Image (cartoon, rainbow over all chains, first blue to last red; front, side, top):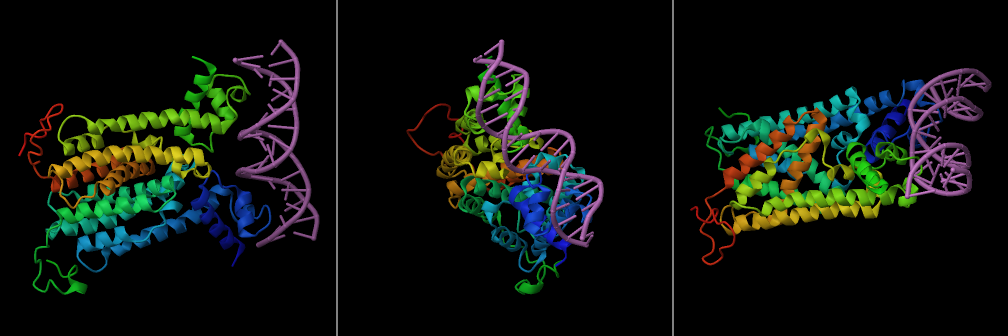
Length: 206
Length: 206
DNA sequence: GTCTATAGACGGATAGAC
DNA sequence: GTCTATCCGTCTATAGAC
């Protein structure tokens, strides 16, 4: 693995563990196993290294949200995504950046964070709109709003898990959300005749 | 105002703006308008000053949650509390602490954060349990879980607001939550025959 | 009680040898 | 391309004058 790759991977892990401001170039070089000063051969400085490292993190997080477009009824997919295992006490690699004033003041970094949430919200919006169209969720639901609500529950779950030092409060928050979704859920209208054909139902609808 | 008070107030505001690790004793003394070194006359160090300053912050945040025990039907109170104005882009004074590794590693500080969320969750639990008992929320709702869900929506709302640099995504998240609560809400049963404390407008529906 | 001066370590970055 | 040596600023904390 090249020094450059070692540096970006080390920076990505340190951004997760400590954040941007609290990560020094020296920390990164030590973890990457390269000598002092090597950052400045490959990058203009800490900022550029962080941008490259965080870009990969964002891509991965957004990619995971593509599971919202998978098989099953819309609400099934929503609940499955909510239930995915997340290491709450480690915090969210994307969301944690918003608490770092140096990130918020860095237009390039904060726009990457905002863009990541927007991209994930788009996936949520699509599946929620589908659920409303199918009658599986009530017509009063505004997809753009519920999308932010669901992202917020996950982000807030990380906050609670870190406060407690335990996965529990995050899991409780997710379960509470799923209970509400189940309580408003209706059987989807048969949008098409062969509606018990699981692997195709969301693609062949009206 | 005493130097000690000036120092705790300055520390509280800097904890909010920058967090614990990023706030130096020098920053605090400058903002407090006291001379270099004065912290160490009144406090053992940065940690003790932060504990005293943050204690007041926690008390205030928990006190605000007492509004959940006010007048109106349980769900009305829940929605009113959710709708309270919050400056999303400034972040949560309590929740932001969880993203600071120095706070998480400081058992005294992180236990204050966890204790604050627990106290607020207790207020949520009480009003949610009341709503379930009245039949205003479905029996499938687990108060301890929905309490964490609602706290998480607010905490996550702060994260989204800071990512965007705008109040909007936080308000959207809150509205999405309220829409769900309205969708599962039922008119409360006339709950109890002889239990007529304070105003009873929420018992006379149905 | 409040301040100035300063200690000793670490921050981000650079110069230049190899 | 990679490393050593080093600059200058800031960090938390302390000593001690006033």
